[in-house]
Each structure stands twice: as C-alpha cells, then as structure tokens.
Length: 203
Image 1 (tube, one colour):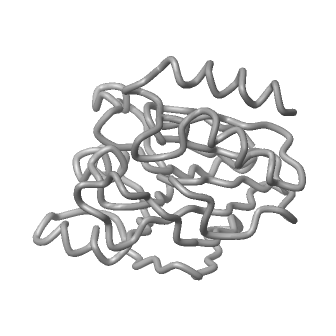
Image 2 (cartoon, rainbow, N blue to C red):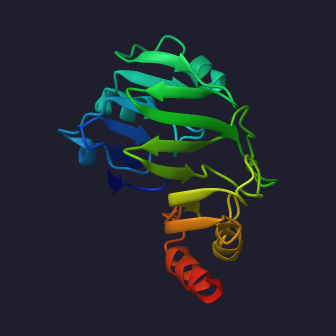
C-alpha cells in the first residue's frame, strides 16, 4: 500500500492492485496540484470546506463517493459523475476489497458551525490497518486502547482539533501504532514538529 499526503487532512491510499482511495482532499490543496490525478473512490469526513469541496471532487472524479447526509444536502443540484453513497456512523463497507468503518468523533467546542456528522475512519487495505481521526478534538469515536494499527493519521492543528500535546497523549492510548502521521496543521505548520517532539518524549 502506498500513501500520499496532501494538504490539511487530504490523503490518497493506493492498494497493490492500483485501486486509489482518497480521503478529505479539499480547499487547502491547490486544485492545479490534482492535474492528471484520478481516484476510484473517496471518503469525506464532514462538511467543512477544508475537508469537503465539490470542485476538488469533480477534479478527482471518483467512481464512488461516500458522504454524510449533510454533505449530500449541500450538493443540491451540483452535477457529479460519482455514485454517491450515504455514510453513517457505524457503517462498515467493503470498497473493492478495502474495508472501512465509519465512526463519529467530537469536533470540540470551538467550531462555529458544528457539523451534523463528523466522521473518523478505520481502514483495512492490503493487510494494513489505518486509523484516520478526522477533526477530532476530544478522545471519542472508538476505543483505541485495544487497537493495533499500522498507521494513525491524527490532527495536530489545535483549536478545532487536538493540539500537539493532546494528539501525542491520544496516540499513546493505542495498543500499538507502527507509524503516526500528523495532519491538519497547514494553518499552524510549527505544530507538526511540536507533535513529533511530544510523541517522541512519551514513546
């Protein structure tokens, strides 16, 4: 499995068979950066513009698009080529052999517009397990104390999500993590290194 990180919480996971799954590629990724890139399926965690962007979805042209009801309503009459599949917390789906569990995470008290859904994802691809925390502010969603993952994608930006210290403490709650990948720090880039230093101290 190959993983490519884009801005904020955007990722592309590419399976050994070439199938590409996109996560939360949206407004903070320059649209021209996606030139020539297509994906097979896409997951969107919630409605905020740094995670959900119809323009970016059109550019990536996923065949299958998994959205919460709030994002589906926001599309309105927007024309997409994708098959839109409504996602709900607790759903378990199989996307061409890639298994995904959707769960709700707490966005915290500082959000001006609290989203109706705010998902995290637990993904199994090519025998690897990946935790995607979405915009998590408080430990929430699923109990990670017994969770063994190959990669954990955790926000570290602060204010709307975990900050560096909170993210490091949360990461230590997992039973095992082989690799932690910080995300959601474009507006406070110094938080990436602050998180890595904090996580190293308590590892």
